[in-house]
Image 1: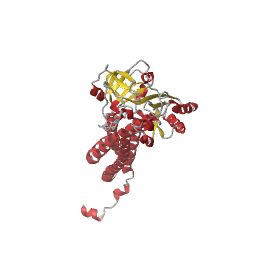
Image 2: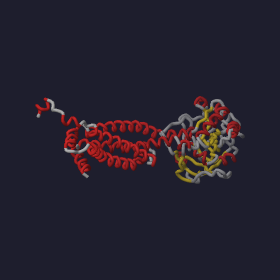
Image 3: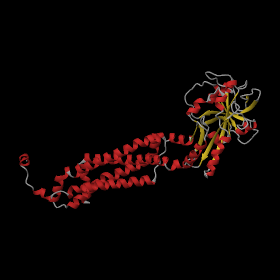
Image 4: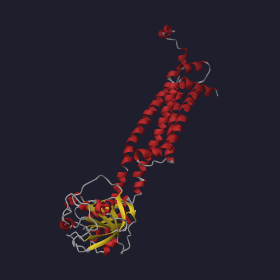
Length: 442
């Protein structure tokens, strides 16, 4: 009790050092556990969570080939379109290597506007005979194809979803802008014409009205059919019934739909294997990529940026804070306490007892502040991570356990440093003659 009382009073006598120690302990513990949560989330995002992804793989024109595709030149463009026969060797090669995958696809072709539906005009439109039409008709094989739409994610504003297996289904989705221009609503009927034969017409019913999830900035388009708001979405079953199939439509004309197959793989490792096989069979000018993995990595950019500076901040706080705590502890227990240590030894207090007192002082100044810092940081880590990088950074037992172990290690080091004040004090200094300067001062 005597040692505890002395330790408590000593903290009051050295108030500045005590306050500095408490503040540093709070800051270090809080920052350590919150930054650890963000860093752990980044590690998981690039590790276990990345490996759990089910990647998509698409084979599309590279930049050079893409520049050669012209919206007003059917021959130069559609001769590069892929058919199911072009994809077949890639699928067979993957199956031979026991790669598990499923697939989905879309078909896109221009269609001509009619009195019942007019496209949003482009800045330099050509005749439908050159472009195939002012609108684009994109048909989805299933809901997965819609989800992987390369024109962007769409959200239904009104109406219902498409029906993918009903060959009698004539429903279609139109954009808000296109619906507003033509005063269309759910249930309205409209007609479009074949890109190469204006006499062939197809009638659709507005099943729903959509908007793009990412509207982006306003942009002008040379041709009307290049405007995403001029795209009519429907089901492949309907397009097939209408005879709009790549194996039945000759290349060189706009009647040849642009077939885009999306392969769905089991893991990033399978995607890498699939990509190697695909590159051996891909037509010249085409490239393989994974839109889902690219989107995933893009989504991680804010997390990576936050983790990058937090990693540096954590090191700076731990190293600088640790050095400062050691210096403050030395000042508090060695430099400013020599007279107190000497007086204690003269009055019969032993070195071990003084050492124990200094250890208690250190524990009083660090244990509670560190516990508070860890507790507050543990609860604040998740909302703080969400605010800084848009990701939830939950606390885990592994993070808490590591923070507690590191904190206990730091406390032990400071306790040892504090203990050395009385331990290394030389008793001979008590009886050393005073220097002339000290005597003159006295």
